[in-house]
Length: 121
Image (cartoon, rainbow, N blue to C red; front, side, top):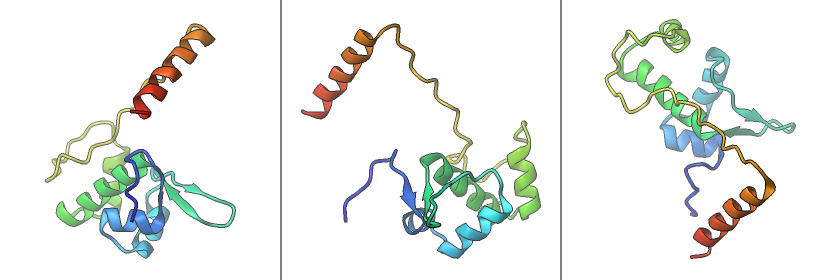
């Protein structure tokens, strides 16, 4: 099996394996946690972004390890202040990355050429 990059989107089966819960649990969590914003294609196929995987791992941690209810997890995810200590601090809400800005197209081309050079090694 080919290993996907950490930035790649995951199917529901891949997400299920990575998170360690059955696919029906992920579908159930979609209905209970509006913070999960997965991509659902027209045919109903689900794709999970890396941020979704981190959030789902955090939800699993709150439910399974911390023993919180669905309502408590929703309150925790919606609150700005993290008052409840999680037993596993690895799963935190990701901080959005700043998008790079470029002054002109030459700068973009230079950056792309650098990336191409790195990838071709």
